[in-house]
Amino acid sequence: MQTVNTHLVVYPAPTGAVVNPDFTVNVRKPHGEWQPLFSYNVKVDMHDVRNASMVTFDCNGPAELEIVKNEGSVEAAVIRPISTGLSCELEANRILLHLDGPQQLSLEVDGDRFHNLHIFANPLEQDVPLVSDDGVLPLEPGIHDTADILGNLAAVSSAVKHKVIYFRPGIHYFDTSRLEIPSNTMIYIAGGAVICGGFICSHVEDVVIRGRGILYLSDFEKTTFYRGVEISYARNISIEGITVIDPPHYTVLIGQSGSIDICNIKTFSTRGWSDGIDMMACSDVNIDSVFLRTSDDCIAIYASRDEYRGDTRRVRVTRSILWADVAHPANIGTHGNYEGDGDVIEDIIFSDIDILEHHEPQPDYWGCLAINAGDNNTVQNVVYENIRIEPFELGELFNVRVLQNAKYNPAPGKQIRDILFKNITYNGNCLNPSHIEGYDEARKVENVRFENVTVNGEHFSMERDVILGPHTNDVEVKPTQV
Image 1 (spheres, rainbow, N blue to C red):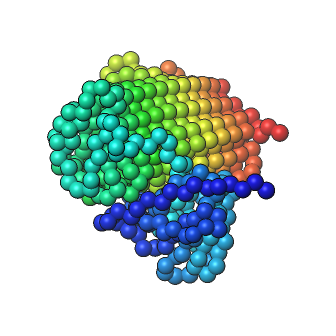
Image 2: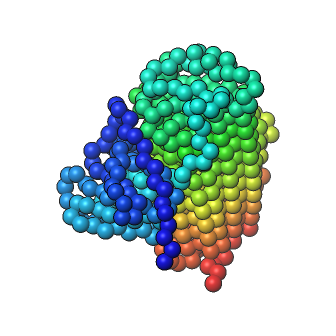
Image 3: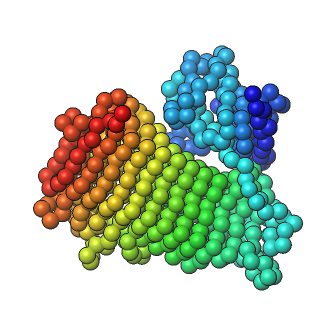
């Protein structure tokens, strides 16, 4: 048997960070020495805000976790996503978990999804900047004058192609609450660093925000509508590895921007409109290996909205976990150019996705996978493939409608066409039928395919599982392929 020499990275506990005492967690290489993990407090679920736990570390191979529930007994423990196939060993209130490598997981004791433990075993970082490198501006914990930061950055030699602002472990504050990042800059947030604030990338290019640190926005009022990262009129922006806790608004806003890469970010939110990743009038957006637990849409794809104008094209969401405590895991099409001929939202792929929750009291906002075309929008060429939907509380699987939402749409949508749902499984008790419906004879839904879609082990059925409304053409269900 081949021996894997795991490299394990554990980050320091930042003094003053909010701890959750529900679990004590240790990690080690197989049969090595246990190392403690700091258990961060993360708030979840807007309808009834509760405190969950989160631990994070890096590894490149097998690792073992020892988890102790500090109060009460443990009758059972479940690891999700279920698709990982992971189980754990239970000894009284002590849980042992073996990982083969990097994972994003939820450990739930006795069916409790709201006081659970989130486990983020990240891959090892590559090409980490050093504080001694040319062009690196290291920042110690404390309160930072953003004008001073930018002034010191500008003073770095112009011979340095990519400048770096390096946030060391500890808690950081901005005097302006958010930092505007200039072009050709890397923001590096070290593991164990907590920044109480966010970042703005406006009219810039070639910006990287990365690391294993945290953006902590829980202390900002909802009325600030601050985002973790705001990207406007920008190109070549990359976000990787960070965690965002309780933003007043979106985790990431992308407005009229292109060539955006988002990888391995994690988020938790509890406010109204605190979506995960929302984009308007964008192109070439790649989202990979993210964990989004939000109190509104996890991912929303729009066209024109507010000051952002134009179509949205070429969006890829892959290998990700979507957990909507409220609203949709994935939503497409609501906003567009209602004053003109509308916009086009096209060439969208969601692939290799685990959906862990969908809970929405308002039927107009049901749909784990929703395409709701409003504002004269055309939505076309959308693929959902290899998606595993776990039991959810309230909603429906698919919602594909050309509509006019009285709250958000001054005009109805134009059309939805060429949509594929392929290799999708759902196992659960919430069996509200899905909806497919056009608006009128000029505003239809056309060419929707369901291939190898199963509900509780049975083939998806047009008679049982879908309400097919008026103004639809060419909707077809193909059975499971052997």
